[in-house]
Image (cartoon, rainbow, N blue to C red; front, side, top):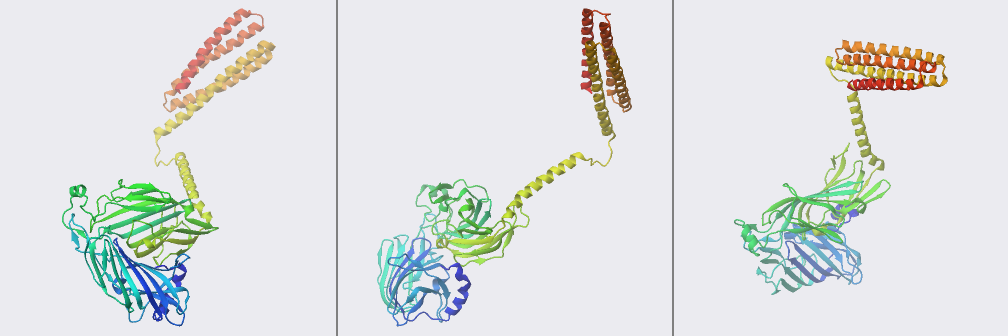
Length: 600
């Protein structure tokens, strides 16, 4: 039905008021050309009607009727005004009732009042589902499928009709039987009835056609379309589809050998079909409960993405399958914003296969967390379910989910919906801040954990090991400082040989001897503590002490040799030889001390 979103609020009131009214009595169907398309598993009936106002008063609206036998199968109805120069314009329809008549009735307003004697050409398009009945209801794999259509030879209308013709287009030229009202003519796949003249309002005459129809009788039992909107640039779409073959059921076993060898075997079965996705679709996947289905093919076209869906097995009558198809879309093509106001414009339902029939559609629109003031504008009436909440990564209070359902849809229902909502942009920082906070807490916890001792009982061995490690560290520090005393001693000797000031040398020697004595006593104290802890390192420290005594003796001998040189008691050549020997010996001792320090 072509109903705008603005008219939804007034539909109930208008239907109540219009239901009390009869159809305009002055209107007449001057000429009617009906086309009944039965080439698929749908019944598509189009009627081009030349309306005439035979009265004197202007008419403001007219009524379109659907016979009661087909009313429950009506999926779509649309009325357009046929313009000679301008494009066809669609009219709004409001369901109404006519007293004393059964069926479905819809009132359409003229674009402008139809004056007395004036004429207007309109086109009425209707689509019916599940009206083609397989007969026989069961066939073997080698048989062809026959169906029966039962309709009306005349246009079911509240107005008298001056002249009308009916043209029936079939799926095959093989016809078992058809009604013979008015001496119809048949040519290949077309049967023409009429012209019929001067038929009364609400005229009915049964039309029955039994013919061959091997087109795909595919029906989507249920489809759940989930659209997840992200303000970070992506819209994820996933469709969960339950598909059923509603043609004649397969009688007997299925032979894969005959199916592949004979081209006519299983002619009414469905091997594959094509799904058309938006041109911007990417990351397409097609799977079922088992996993990914690799037999599908994807082709990127200029204005769409075409996916060939091939189930794991061919579908015969009564067989069904279940699969999931999903893809991503860039949000900038569908999401519009003005400040904190957002509008999402995309299809309520998309193309699954040609001449699709959907028994039940469920749309779940997942909006960003924090969206509020949600308003949905649908191109036709839908049923809103209570909103839900959806939780995913880094969500705190949940994302709002708009849930809508509708039954009995066809290709004409592939239209855009618009969802308006408000969203504070500052909330986009929520997820990054949550990530930063989580890492901060993690690192802080690790820092606390490695620095605290959470043991309940004390470990004596570990405590001794820690004490020994601490004492050893102190020994290393003191030994290195004591070796530094010898370097200072060498520097004092060098200054003495240049300045020949014995007072300065004596002062420096006394200071260095005092520092050396203090360090040696400290090391001896630490050695005693290591020995008390039972550590073998105490012996190493004792050996270092002995070697240091030898280094000390060599250092003081170097001082004495320098004094003899300056006092003239030792020749320079003898001093240089003595200095070389003392230095070489001292380097050997220091190397042995370093080796022991490495052991510590």
